[in-house]
Length: 129
Image (tube, rainbow, N blue to C red; front, side):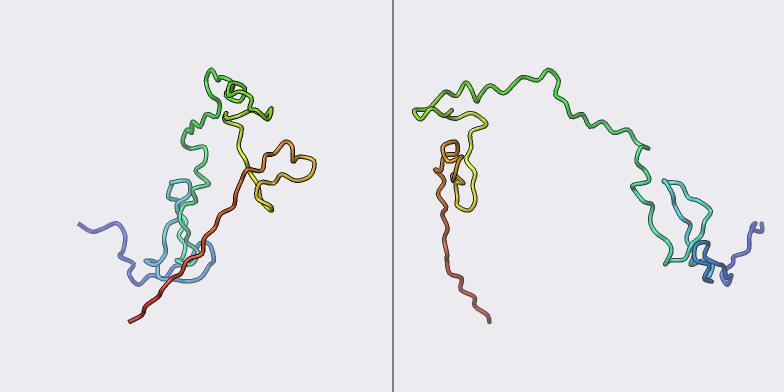
């Protein structure tokens, strides 16, 4: 039984995007939004299906809120230390840079400076054979 179309192994065609001539078997169909369209382009003009065009095609459930939230009371429950500042809790931490601890100027009473910077320098021996 004969086929519907000729083989076209020597056929010349134009790229639908840039207009350059190529062998028909070198041209590829474009895929846009997961659907193949009847646009045939050369290898230089061909690009894969862009994932950003598929936004909204699939349902995305990304909740941000927490059901029945409770306030963080660990800051008040942790108690007050001998210096009058809260001890423990989830919001009591020290930070600092230049100098380590950062307690300087008007906030020196609010920011404790108990941080100690530590560093080490070692030696490395490299042997080549």
